[in-house]
Image (tube, rainbow, N blue to C red; front, side):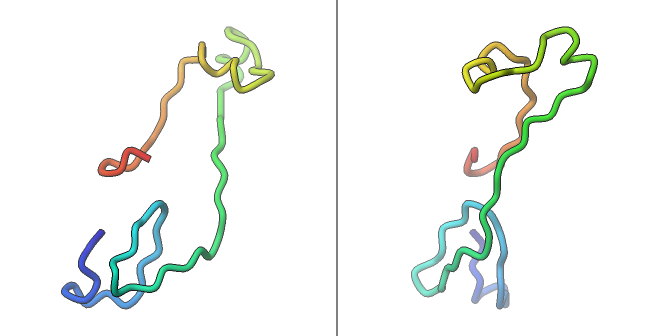
Length: 69
């Protein structure tokens, strides 16, 4: 997390951030994750019916480079 005071930042909006001790942190929204697949992929491997089906799926996942979330 950047040093808000040193960098002259008044407001910071982000996901999975830990606030500095001298900052006020408020949740303003909740997010959900989406799983997307092409029609060709679904034809080849089928539509997952339950979360456990995703264990065998070929998944590309994006995550924060520092936190891994």
